[in-house]
Length: 64
Image (cartoon, rainbow, N blue to C red):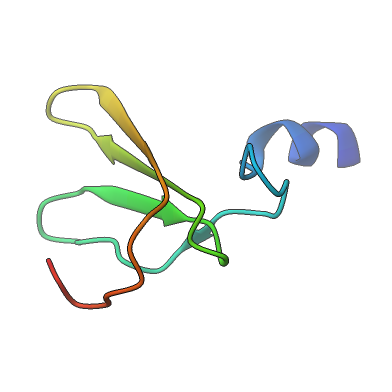
């Protein structure tokens, strides 16, 4: 079971910490996962079935 959990948890490619989901918009079903150190951000858009990855996420909160 530990092996399966390890496959499903996503990590930052720079610092290898676990990505946190804290900016998700429930109404639009967009899932945003960010690195706690703001190195990396990964967004999932289910309507388009796509991932958008970005590096060096700015530290300004609430800009969306």
